[in-house]
Picture (spheres, rainbow, N blue to C red):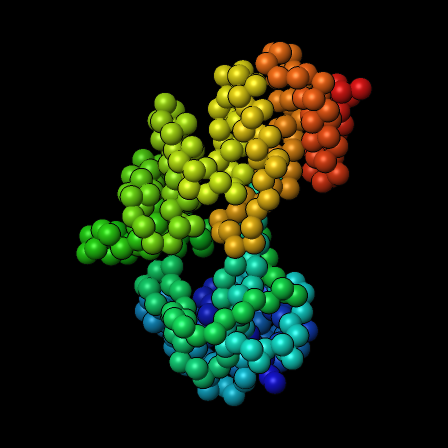
Length: 357
């Protein structure tokens, strides 16, 4: 069975080679739909790739329309499966093609890095069987309307994108998206997807007051609950300080298996030097076992930050005398040792560990 990678591109010369290189041992061919590049994008793909490259020149209408035109082209190229790829993505791992008979669409884990110690993890449909008629919906923040189509998960391969190496293309897209999303919002202010991504776009553009307004509206709507959780969390970040405890508490009540609101609540109490209260939130965070279906995950907080903050808070909470100090010191020492093992900020955590000896 054959597999191609489908890329819709425009002026991606600065990073496209990274993506192409990651595909060489993963797929049989690259299908490139170019919507009007005036740089060397096409030439770089052709020169970098050691596997066949099929090129079609088109134009950009909106994201769903143009991606669907790209899918039509990929369907016509004769491959059994289509891997959906964006520029600046890297594919890490392998795909066992013998396991592709039990579904028609497959999710992959997506790891999105946007700072030295900040990343988001979610999953998205990245592989589909060709010629089954599934298409994208939405002028912006488009998605595959899979409906009841059988889906599965690929665990042997994940997608990585380092946005710290991105150029200003993202900001230009956000500016364009904002106008389109506001038009859609005026037509239907209750559309939860439009509302959420309008808030997201305002957040990306650092329009904090507008982001807070739309996130707040999104919390009042039902629909996709992961979006609603994230909206509670972002309201806590953008609201007036006196409202932050409410919003972070609502985020925790909505999704008690998430550590992000617990760390946010602990931070507020740490700033007020209320270490015993901060300790309670961090203890719960350290006891939390996340499930695998969560989206918009701040992975750094799960891997490192909850342990690092516990190693600090437990020491100061022990001095307050509210809880058993020997137990607190033991928990703080253990948290510090776990933080050190992550290799994130070893020097700092080793200095903290010295306080427990």
